[in-house]
Length: 329
Image 1 (tube, rainbow, N blue to C red):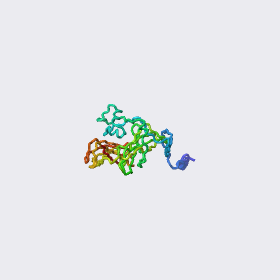
Image 2 (cartoon, rainbow, N blue to C red; image 1 turned 180 degrees about the horizontal axis):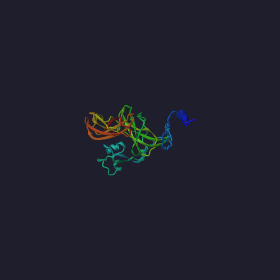
Image 3 (spheres, rainbow, N blue to C red; image 1 turned 90 degrees about the horizontal axis):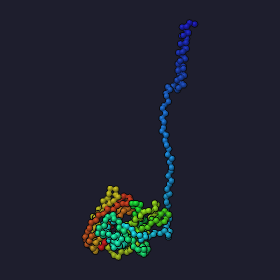
């Protein structure tokens, strides 16, 4: 065979086998051209923090009923202090704490009864052991007492408010109660006498009673109240009427300014003092603050005097306020 014929045969052979080898290669790759593998993204190492399920705080059930040895204890005769507020007078402070101006002045040498400084603390004499030991027990008068509503005060103290209602058809005076704070074990942690801002409780009326507890106090507690005194008033007191009453609330409703006019009725005797109290309530009807104003004025029957005082909330926003007053001779 000639060299030219050999070359022609080999060329035809190669043209036949080359497409088959290409098809075999493509078929082996699934007819998809090979691509470089995608770049691997490294996930940063995360330090895992072990989550510890919080231990549930036990919810205290009903407090145990105090036994005979854990009944409310009356305050000791240790003297305590009163912080002077706007409108306070020594005679008003003495009447509130059932003492006299002379005793207060004796316990506070150098005090000027005509120039009391707002914010100054005045020592209130508590009397002797005999007087404290023989405090009157609960009266059988069927007065209605709400459960204490207690709110924290500055520096760990506690204010407790109790509303007392008079369902009788006679006026009462000198109303007081003992508020006691119990620990979760049912033990008495502290007891204080709760007093009203005014003295007279008219038929069908109500008054707030207030008691302050100094720290330290138990973190979890329950408060109870026991009526201490409620005496029939000797006769109808001076009759007054509040008119032109206005109430201005702060934007956060943490305080309310009350103003108006108090008129002494034509049938009343002249008075030398007017006591005004503002009581603040939250949306649930709980007392959240109270403020008292004493107006020293010689008021004759038919005459009027104006008043203005601001009451502050110790906790929730103020929903509404109530103003009560009393004439004193």
